[in-house]
Length: 461
Image 1: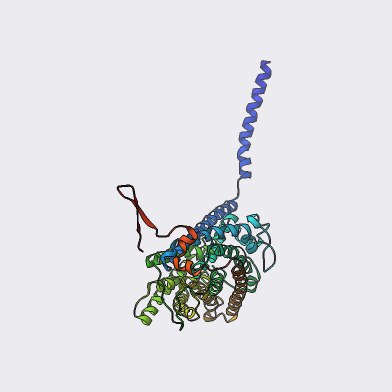
Image 2: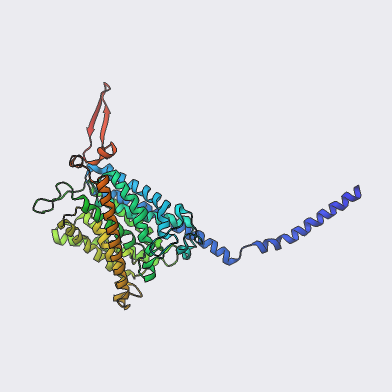
């Protein structure tokens, strides 16, 4: 028995030695190659980068909320905040359920039809995104969902102070979950615009023109706010209640735009020019709008200067990765000029847009997209590339205007006939805060007197 035990022990020790000697060889065989390790690190870094840029885009919701609330009257402040808050929630939910599939799913060159409820992968369902496989699908979805919510929230400002909340919610769901994703499929989802060679780096047309056209249709079908235009067509000013809100919102949007433009590289390589173009676009747009208002009216209009910044940013969004920094400055300056006159034009047409959303996003979105055809580093008309790219850009702009215009007209008309779009005159004049939400954005301070009697004091804004 003892001899057998000793033999067993010796065998066990020998086995452990052999395993120990073999372990490094096995570990070496199982270890990833340098290329595989670099690929994993690249994937992780790009995923983090895209996620953080998505956070910046999502954070733009605060900017829109501040701008739209500040440029409208105080009696609908809670209503405006609520619309922006719920639009973010709706946009994310709709893009998760159907938007990602329609925009990036496998299907035709017009419409995707796979990967609903984020069930696809780069290999099965979202093959159009296979070239971005170095970014996790979930991060890619979040980044794009934030874009969808941004496109839908453009409608909120143009339809401010007179729209039923329940009707707006239906519109927001269908714009972010259906209309916007179809446009996305045409370009970023590898559809017919992409095949044609149309270029839109970060969404001057895909995001901003889509939202701007839908906002124009909505504002036109709603009609102007009570008292906005006199019988002879003269425009009556209805000032917003908080310029500080509007300016703070503009700064928030400007910061968020780095997520929009720089993040659209979907990786950290080669982002330098897009950073500079984004900064210069907003800067030159704001300066130009301020100078134009100063020359025309003798004063520098604060709200119009803010819209000039946003117009400049929209104007460089399509070309942020395609144009030189100097071209970004030119595009931004022209956008700042355009927005001033576009706001005046829509007022002459009696289309009441309280925050100038159609001018900023719609008109300057179209201009910025055409600007790629003018200033593209390789294919721009003014940079020696001929007129071919400009023609492709024009086709894309016209196609999106036609599709979104018709689709949103049918959508708004259906909602108007069934649910109604507009609140009553009495409700509009009283403000929408208490009507829609049961609370004022700026409520009354409640005190308790020494005898226990509650005392209220109105807050003046």
